[in-house]
Length: 183
Image (cartoon, rainbow, N blue to C red; front, side):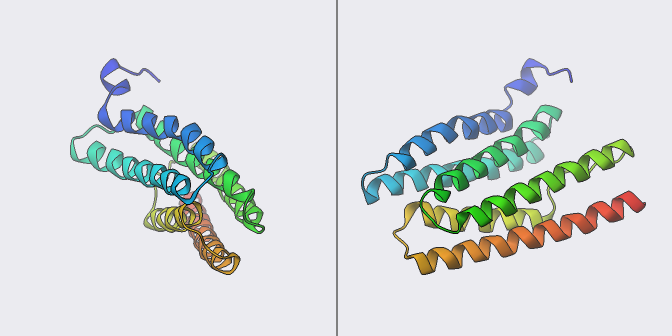
């Protein structure tokens, strides 16, 4: 892949780089939080990261700045951010490991599905609506767990909600991959 300087430093790609840079900052702040205010700051970083994710896509489409590098780095930044969040939360919430397993299983299955499609000369272009909804639910629930003092019962509700949408997204992507494979 040949990447020009213009593509490398396009606004959408810079926003993706910022998301990646925010990951260790979030992890450090969350793991070293001493007060509720520290948790608010960590949650604010997730919100800011989510907004950069939203705007990088909007800007790329609106101003015709979609690049092959952006198609690669944007989902990598997403998965690294989501992975860092669940990694941090697994230390605090007893059942978060189930979300971790579901998240890893879903992402590995999607990776495998993409590899199989690529071998057939096909490609899933961009996230589907159900993937976007699942990601939005993930961020809302995980941000609440990071930033708000929730009881274990509420944490369980948020994790179940996240798990339902991760599972739904997995099933719908599987159907999409199967249909594309059969075409």
